[in-house]
Image 1 (cartoon, rainbow, N blue to C red):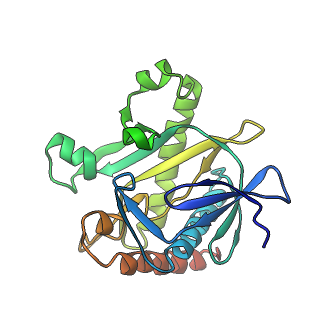
Image 2: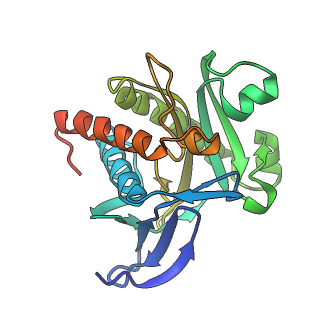
Amino acid sequence: MNLGTLVYEGKGKKIYKDPADQRQVWMEFKDDLTAFNAQKKGSFSGKGRLNGEMATLIFRYLKRAGIPSHFVSWEPDRFMRVEEVKIIPLEVVVRNYLAGSLAKKLGKEEGEKLPRPIVEFYYKDDGLNDPFVSDDQIMALNLAPGTDLMALKTAALEINVHLREIFRPMGLRLVDFKLEFGRDVDGRLLLADEITPDGCRLWDEKTLEKFDKDRFRRDLGGIDHAYKEVHKRLVSFMRERGIEI
């Protein structure tokens, strides 16, 4: 496979310019694990393939639901072809339950269900540890026009509905998750990056066992087992609905 020129390498992926189509790029999913803005590092064999396959299945499900994304195709065992987009410099976080930084900030126990989903924005800058930014700050600093801001919130809440449709039958509670968006060369707003246990908190509905990257962040062990279990449940769920990797 001719991946073309490496144009970017992040914590979890490498990006290559597709020589066959200048509107598209290849994403290579790495086996690396990072936390706390790469201050903590690890890996496990096969993690890149697992994440790539899970992201592929979710993008395909969301496409059926009318959610546009940058996803084009999956090339086993760790390469995804996607539309090239200009990433909006905001991480969009949707919270259904109190957990992580929000629980800590409010001095509350993790696991409390929120009266309604909360959408938060964080400025994408590793050097600043991706700080929280308010709507007013976003518009004042021109990080996203007002129309984009409302579009991001609307899209994030709609995606939340569909993701809960996926994970609930799998016996997993979608506690919170992170999204990224970008615009393609035609100006279309597209869901980008990935949706995997790297960026979602997923708890078992009965036992509240964690099946996400918190197992790595908090030294709980069994990170490879957790990702493999989510992958297994997700593949089963999608096959029942006629969606294959």
